[in-house]
Amino acid sequence: MKGIAFELKGDFAFFKKPDVNQENYFTYSHIHKVALLGILGAIIGLDGYSQAKRNNSGEERIFPEFYQKLKDLRISIVPHGDRGYFSRKIQTFTNTTGFANKRSNLIVKEQCLENPHWTIYLFASDEMEEGLFNTLSDYLINKKAEFIPYLGKNEHYASISNPRWVNLSDVEETSYIQSLFPLREAIEFDNEEDTFDEDDDFFFRENMPTSLQKETILYGLEPLIYTNMYMENIEFEHMYEAEDKVLVFI
Image (cartoon, rainbow, N blue to C red; front, side, top):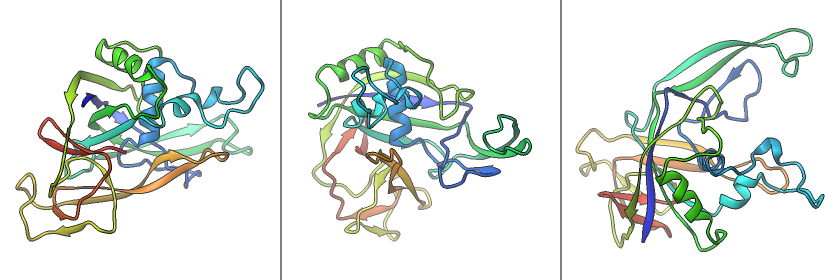
């Protein structure tokens, strides 16, 4: 099966956690599926959140167009940070819009990721609109974009490089996964066995958005894991091998 891969990086990235909305803004540790779909939607010219009010027939649109059309796209995210983490920086700025604080200006401290880098893998599911993945592939391979992609905020420009076709082959059995993957109760982690990179074992876990909820359009969260540890009882519906890596697609 054919898929698309590319490198996604930038000087900074900020994927805001919605559970904090006062003086301190925190970021997710990695780009998540919804944010990635937003980037891909911008590349092929789909509407975002600000346009998701009403369509031409007057009916309310449940989801932003980019999510409505791309939510069935299968993605896999491979981090290139140190043990699954990127260094972070705190930026301080003044919010003078009046929306954050009616009485005075609000001093905001915002956390962001420094020099993030992920390898992204994509393939089309049967539920996707016919021809949409071909359009997306054409834009990526030929380095075209309708709108400038950015990593969470429009001052954090996204660099997309080395777009390429890859072969995805089925994985019958494995003890390692080289991408982010959803936590499953059946998986057993064994720190007595060798790691896939022969380095000290590490284990990253964070509840991250993998979907949008209907009506509220709030994030649907799922615990995602990134580890180099040996594992047993690994079973996923969409698990493939590409470029000598075992990948789980979400």
